[in-house]
Image (cartoon, rainbow, N blue to C red; front, top):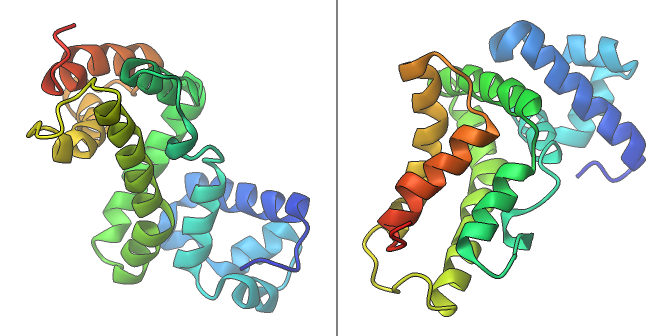
Length: 191
């Protein structure tokens, strides 16, 4: 999509978009502000990404350079630990706050919802499916385990509920414990 930009310039643009999102939120983010911050023209932004929702979704995807499907430690628990280790606590807190803001915006913006699903959510769900399929193939999880389709819901729930219930950001220690105490037992690991 952004074929004529150098990878460095594209990364710079994406970082500026994420910075602006954190500063002003999705609704107040404008292509004018992105153009000003990145010293580019609005025409260039629209030519490269087509719309604000697409640009935001691509910036978020760029922020997650490792696909879940690429994680393969040889065990499901190891894969979950590697997922948690992808980001430090500070970055996780920033990303969680950003996603909470975007979830509010999704309710009023079907184009944003569609872009996030296509560019960010579906690839993550597909990657998680690959991780879980490998666990089934290794015999770690029964193929007919009724919790398999709900693992993504459990993971999203961990992010949403921690802030809401405990007024604490999600961090590596919480997620590691959550996987061991909730997700793995649901999949048949009595840990």
